[in-house]
Length: 197
Image 1 (cartoon, rainbow, N blue to C red):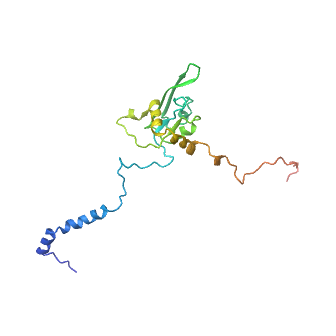
Image 2 (image 1 turned 180 degrees about the horizontal axis):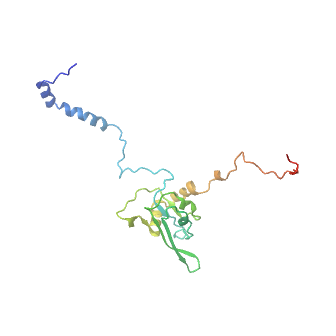
Image 3 (image 1 turned 90 degrees about the horizontal axis):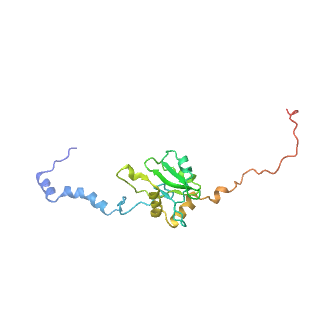
Protein backbone atom coordinates (compact mmCIF):
# COMPACT_ATOMS: atom_id res chain seq x y z
CA UNK A 1 0.00 0.00 0.00
CA UNK A 2 1.50 3.25 -1.07
CA UNK A 3 1.43 6.30 1.09
CA UNK A 4 -0.18 9.33 -0.43
CA UNK A 5 1.96 12.37 -0.89
CA UNK A 6 0.71 15.53 0.76
CA UNK A 7 -0.65 17.92 -1.75
CA UNK A 8 0.50 21.50 -1.81
CA UNK A 9 -2.60 22.74 0.01
CA UNK A 10 -2.22 20.24 2.88
CA UNK A 11 1.45 21.16 3.30
CA UNK A 12 0.54 24.84 3.27
CA UNK A 13 -2.12 24.34 5.99
CA UNK A 14 0.29 22.32 8.17
CA UNK A 15 2.86 25.08 7.86
CA UNK A 16 0.38 27.88 8.63
CA UNK A 17 -1.10 26.17 11.69
CA UNK A 18 2.30 24.94 13.02
CA UNK A 19 1.21 21.30 13.16
CA UNK A 20 4.82 20.04 13.26
CA UNK A 21 5.70 22.41 16.08
CA UNK A 22 2.64 21.37 18.08
CA UNK A 23 3.53 17.72 17.59
CA UNK A 24 7.02 18.43 18.90
CA UNK A 25 5.73 20.48 21.83
CA UNK A 26 3.33 17.71 22.85
CA UNK A 27 6.07 15.86 24.73
CA UNK A 28 7.32 19.05 26.33
CA UNK A 29 3.85 19.98 27.55
CA UNK A 30 3.27 16.46 28.83
CA UNK A 31 6.45 16.41 30.91
CA UNK A 32 5.92 19.95 32.16
CA UNK A 33 3.09 18.83 34.43
CA UNK A 34 4.59 15.58 35.71
CA UNK A 35 6.59 15.33 38.94
CA UNK A 36 10.32 15.78 38.22
CA UNK A 37 12.68 12.93 39.02
CA UNK A 38 15.76 15.14 39.33
CA UNK A 39 16.81 17.47 42.12
CA UNK A 40 17.87 21.09 41.70
CA UNK A 41 21.23 20.27 43.27
CA UNK A 42 22.55 23.35 45.00
CA UNK A 43 19.14 24.17 46.46
CA UNK A 44 17.87 20.63 47.07
CA UNK A 45 20.53 18.41 48.59
CA UNK A 46 20.28 14.68 48.80
CA UNK A 47 20.35 13.46 52.41
CA UNK A 48 23.22 11.11 53.15
CA UNK A 49 22.42 7.54 54.08
CA UNK A 50 22.91 6.71 57.74
CA UNK A 51 26.44 5.55 58.34
CA UNK A 52 27.76 7.26 55.21
CA UNK A 53 31.54 7.67 55.32
CA UNK A 54 32.27 11.22 54.28
CA UNK A 55 34.72 13.93 55.27
CA UNK A 56 37.04 13.26 58.22
CA UNK A 57 36.86 15.08 61.54
CA UNK A 58 38.72 15.07 64.86
CA UNK A 59 36.46 14.95 67.90
CA UNK A 60 36.71 17.97 70.18
CA UNK A 61 36.53 17.27 73.92
CA UNK A 62 33.57 19.32 75.23
CA UNK A 63 35.27 20.14 78.56
CA UNK A 64 38.76 21.09 77.39
CA UNK A 65 37.82 22.22 73.85
CA UNK A 66 40.91 20.35 72.61
CA UNK A 67 41.13 17.34 70.32
CA UNK A 68 40.52 13.99 71.99
CA UNK A 69 43.47 12.51 70.11
CA UNK A 70 46.34 11.47 72.39
CA UNK A 71 48.73 10.58 69.58
CA UNK A 72 48.82 6.81 70.13
CA UNK A 73 49.22 6.24 66.39
CA UNK A 74 46.84 3.28 66.09
CA UNK A 75 44.87 5.00 63.33
CA UNK A 76 48.04 5.61 61.31
CA UNK A 77 49.24 2.05 61.91
CA UNK A 78 46.02 0.40 60.74
CA UNK A 79 45.42 2.67 57.72
CA UNK A 80 45.84 0.52 54.56
CA UNK A 81 46.59 3.51 52.33
CA UNK A 82 49.00 5.20 54.79
CA UNK A 83 47.23 8.53 54.47
CA UNK A 84 47.38 9.46 58.19
CA UNK A 85 50.49 11.13 59.59
CA UNK A 86 50.90 12.02 63.27
CA UNK A 87 53.74 14.11 64.75
CA UNK A 88 53.99 14.07 68.54
CA UNK A 89 56.27 15.52 71.18
CA UNK A 90 56.63 15.31 74.94
CA UNK A 91 54.63 17.82 76.97
CA UNK A 92 55.45 19.62 80.22
CA UNK A 93 54.08 16.83 82.40
CA UNK A 94 55.83 14.17 80.30
CA UNK A 95 52.64 13.33 78.40
CA UNK A 96 52.47 12.85 74.66
CA UNK A 97 51.28 15.97 72.80
CA UNK A 98 49.99 15.88 69.22
CA UNK A 99 51.80 18.62 67.30
CA UNK A 100 50.49 17.77 63.84
CA UNK A 101 47.77 15.42 62.67
CA UNK A 102 47.33 15.17 58.91
CA UNK A 103 45.09 13.13 56.64
CA UNK A 104 45.65 13.06 52.89
CA UNK A 105 42.04 12.80 51.69
CA UNK A 106 43.06 11.96 48.12
CA UNK A 107 44.73 8.75 49.29
CA UNK A 108 42.03 7.73 51.76
CA UNK A 109 39.87 4.67 50.99
CA UNK A 110 37.13 5.70 53.45
CA UNK A 111 37.25 2.24 55.00
CA UNK A 112 36.80 3.67 58.54
CA UNK A 113 39.43 1.37 60.03
CA UNK A 114 40.94 4.43 61.71
CA UNK A 115 37.61 5.11 63.42
CA UNK A 116 37.36 1.54 64.66
CA UNK A 117 40.98 1.40 65.84
CA UNK A 118 40.91 4.63 67.86
CA UNK A 119 40.53 3.70 71.55
CA UNK A 120 39.40 7.23 72.47
CA UNK A 121 36.90 7.80 69.66
CA UNK A 122 38.91 10.77 68.42
CA UNK A 123 38.54 10.24 64.65
CA UNK A 124 35.20 10.14 62.83
CA UNK A 125 33.93 10.16 59.26
CA UNK A 126 31.14 12.71 58.95
CA UNK A 127 28.15 12.45 56.64
CA UNK A 128 29.33 15.50 54.66
CA UNK A 129 30.03 14.62 51.03
CA UNK A 130 30.33 18.01 49.33
CA UNK A 131 33.92 19.06 49.24
CA UNK A 132 36.02 20.15 46.32
CA UNK A 133 39.27 21.97 45.81
CA UNK A 134 41.48 23.57 43.23
CA UNK A 135 44.76 21.91 44.16
CA UNK A 136 46.16 19.04 46.23
CA UNK A 137 46.78 21.24 49.26
CA UNK A 138 43.02 21.68 49.67
CA UNK A 139 42.74 17.95 50.35
CA UNK A 140 45.45 17.82 53.00
CA UNK A 141 43.45 17.87 56.24
CA UNK A 142 45.43 19.35 59.12
CA UNK A 143 44.52 19.12 62.79
CA UNK A 144 42.88 22.56 62.65
CA UNK A 145 40.80 21.70 59.57
CA UNK A 146 39.72 18.41 61.13
CA UNK A 147 38.58 20.18 64.30
CA UNK A 148 36.69 22.71 62.17
CA UNK A 149 34.95 19.81 60.42
CA UNK A 150 33.81 18.50 63.81
CA UNK A 151 32.47 21.93 64.77
CA UNK A 152 30.71 22.35 61.43
CA UNK A 153 29.15 18.96 60.87
CA UNK A 154 29.09 16.92 64.07
CA UNK A 155 28.56 19.20 67.09
CA UNK A 156 25.84 18.65 69.64
CA UNK A 157 23.57 15.63 69.59
CA UNK A 158 24.57 14.67 66.06
CA UNK A 159 28.05 13.58 67.19
CA UNK A 160 26.69 11.68 70.18
CA UNK A 161 24.11 9.88 68.07
CA UNK A 162 26.82 9.03 65.53
CA UNK A 163 28.91 7.25 68.14
CA UNK A 164 25.95 5.48 69.71
CA UNK A 165 24.61 4.24 66.41
CA UNK A 166 27.77 3.16 64.61
CA UNK A 167 30.76 2.84 66.89
CA UNK A 168 29.45 2.27 70.41
CA UNK A 169 29.13 -1.26 71.76
CA UNK A 170 25.62 -2.61 71.35
CA UNK A 171 24.01 -4.98 73.83
CA UNK A 172 23.26 -7.36 70.95
CA UNK A 173 26.99 -7.76 70.32
CA UNK A 174 27.57 -9.34 73.74
CA UNK A 175 24.62 -11.72 74.10
CA UNK A 176 25.34 -15.41 74.41
CA UNK A 177 23.78 -17.38 71.56
CA UNK A 178 20.92 -19.67 72.62
CA UNK A 179 22.56 -22.82 71.24
CA UNK A 180 25.94 -22.05 72.86
CA UNK A 181 27.56 -25.07 74.53
CA UNK A 182 27.89 -24.67 78.29
CA UNK A 183 30.78 -26.12 80.30
CA UNK A 184 29.31 -28.02 83.24
CA UNK A 185 32.53 -29.49 84.67
CA UNK A 186 34.86 -32.37 83.91
CA UNK A 187 33.60 -35.88 83.53
CA UNK A 188 34.56 -38.20 86.39
CA UNK A 189 34.83 -41.25 84.12
CA UNK A 190 38.33 -42.43 83.48
CA UNK A 191 39.27 -43.65 80.04
CA UNK A 192 42.03 -46.21 79.61
CA UNK A 193 43.81 -45.29 76.40
CA UNK A 194 45.89 -48.47 76.35
CA UNK A 195 42.86 -50.76 75.95
CA UNK A 196 40.98 -48.53 73.52
CA UNK A 197 40.09 -50.24 70.29
